[in-house]
Length: 272
Image (cartoon, rainbow, N blue to C red):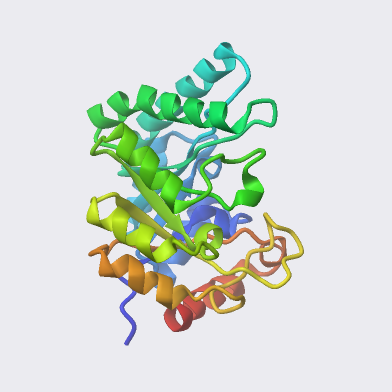
């Protein structure tokens, strides 16, 4: 029988459900962990969400997502830092041990400057993260998102940034959707794990062709990513954390979410 003790789902995967429905259905389906998107808990106190999740027998895996540091003006950048500091405090109240960082990008800011701003932003929030015992995981995003979402686009860049900052609370989240294409992937996963910085592992699939590069991700096994191979590289480093399903899909959001959850569980069991 498949061991579901490492089976986790990001709350955005079942976006149409409110958190109460989500945790009740996840617990019933045998899901063990939930990564909570901050949008999912808007309108409630993090402690209230934490109690709801705990009562369902689920573990909070992470808070998603912080970051988005680059901006043209110093005032905007400071506001982004304040937003991240607030998210760190909310994460502590939620009981989330980790925040996933989508580092950000701005078309008005050049790549090199934006990457400097990302580093400065992370360095500005790390003391508060350390104080509250929260880890930060840089998630490199596919290069197609380098204009608006992240100027950190490869595992090598994420590893280099972690080495440059060199803080025990800073690591990397590996999302197969963003890094599967990278010819250096195996070596950079090994490097990340060797340095103790591999903090999270996210799975979904790349459909061919995607109808929407943001909101048409596939269920595991539905596309071209060799997820078991990448998982083997991740686990060879000694990583034994949650294997987290993170799918954005207008098609799946439009269907019956109970049926969709059954499909997610079957795909996780058979294709991951």
